[in-house]
Amino acid sequence: MKKTSIVILGGGLAGLSAAMYLDKTLARRADAEVTLINRENFILSTPTLHEVASGDLYPGDIVNPIRRIFVM
Image 1 (cartoon, rainbow, N blue to C red):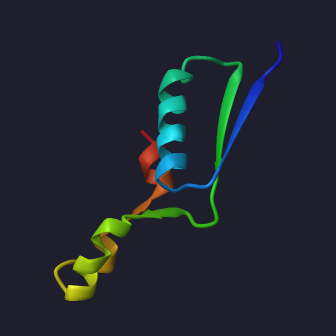
Image 2 (cartoon, rainbow, N blue to C red; image 1 turned 135 degrees about the vertical axis):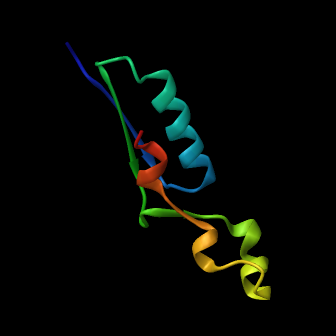
Image 3 (cartoon, rainbow, N blue to C red; image 1 turned 90 degrees about the vertical axis):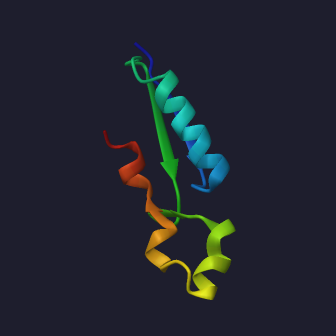
C-alpha cells in the first residue's frame, strides 16, 4: 500500500487550521500522514498582543504549544 504524505510548512493560523482539518478528516486512514513543520513549537495569538503591552494579560496567556493542540 502506498502512503500519502502531506507536509504543511508554517504553523501560523492558516497552517494550523489546515493541519487540524486534515487531522480530523484523515484520522482513520492508515495510508495518509500529515506533518506540520514550524520554526517555533507554539502559536502566538497576535491580535491580543496589545493587551500584553497594556498589562491586562500575561505573555503566557496568548501562547499555546502546538503539540498540546494535537495530542488527545
